[in-house]
Amino acid sequence: MSNSTPDNRSGAERGRLTPADWEQAALELIAEKGISALAVEPLARRLGITKGSFYWHFPGKDELLDKALERWESQDRYHLKLALGADLDPAERLSQFVWRTSRQTLTHRIYTALCAAPDDPRVGPVLKRVTSRRIDYLSVAFQELGLSASDARQRSNLVYSSYVGYLQLQAQGLVPDRDEPDFDQYVQHVIETLVDV
Amino acid sequence: MSNSTPDNRSGAERGRLTPADWEQAALELIAEKGISALAVEPLARRLGITKGSFYWHFPGKDELLDKALERWESQDRYHLKLALGADLDPAERLSQFVWRTSRQTLTHRIYTALCAAPDDPRVGPVLKRVTSRRIDYLSVAFQELGLSASDARQRSNLVYSSYVGYLQLQAQGLVPDRDEPDFDQYVQHVIETLVDV
DNA sequence: GTAACCCCATACTCTGCCGTATGGAAGCTG
DNA sequence: CAGCTTCCATACGGCAGAGTATGGGGTTAC
Image 1 (cartoon, rainbow over the protein chains, first blue to last red):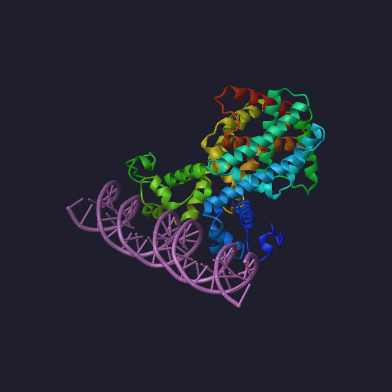
Image 2 (cartoon, rainbow over the protein chains, first blue to last red):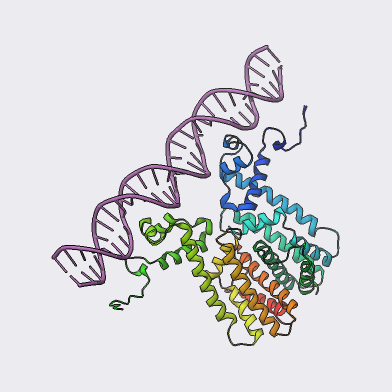
């Protein structure tokens, strides 16, 4: 209860590191180079430190990945609440979802990286939970728009598929980014085609 | 010109191997474990041989990847001609495209594996060519259905995005496979929503 | 102030893959 | 059947990352 020094700064800002710092750095590395590139020594070099630190905080590489994925899942759940749990009418929530797609934010990049390894026993369950949770949110919104349960589910699958695919095309540089003028038109096209019922 | 023994069997069926055997095996390994898992010695073990053979046929690992991707690209071009180049009316061609998506055939699995590494300098160009070639075919079909050039392109991007995303969901096991009864309904839903104009 | 504890550096071993060198067996050639 | 080419096995050196052991510097607690 003493708590003489609160010190809520992330350890990276002090000299020492916390497990959370390693987890977040791991997620950023995954976002950039994919899961197979997650290695202890490169990660340590990235943090300007040696792996002696890592093996003090974590038993090994697998535990880091588990904790990092756990962290990412809770972050995603938080973002999902913000985007689709807002107190807006369903059509507006769905539009919000489509718009947010365009941002190549960290969470999206991590998601695509995880999609690349769906068969990994550590990744698969997390990925499956996150994906179906997102689709469920979409499905609820479509039901509120008047679609039947099965229609809402199919439409949700379609919308979500196009979301994931768009991320891929964006990574390939084959689709306009949201700075370019074409982008707004495309989003409008998607909303008209998939959301307006 | 002698050609005493034609012997068109793939080398794997004899004792010896040809470069084509290595390339095809490389593609299958990529389809299963992703690009980062493409390694010479594991591949050799898979073929029941040692790497002494490999380094006789290829200068190194990079050259194998290049040749394998080149091989895949030509295979994909061939498949594309079959699916969308057929002499059918445009709506029928597009339906064919959607239906073919469901098959988790080797080419599709390779494609998803390549999508995971779009930043790789060896993968990127090939992937970009294949993707835009496929989208172009779609775009032509939509134009023949009466859409304007820009509308056709946007619709093609959307259809193709949903294709890529569907592959991902399929890999996660979150979407019905084409054996299951729900699948036909979903495909019908997709065609009604995205193809019928 | 000093003892205890937290965090990290350093120096190993071990494993897996890359690429090279070299020799040997099988098949064609004359 | 000699000789050459083709294809593969084996054995080596090198590198990168995993994980362990151990010691040391900085901080906290009493």
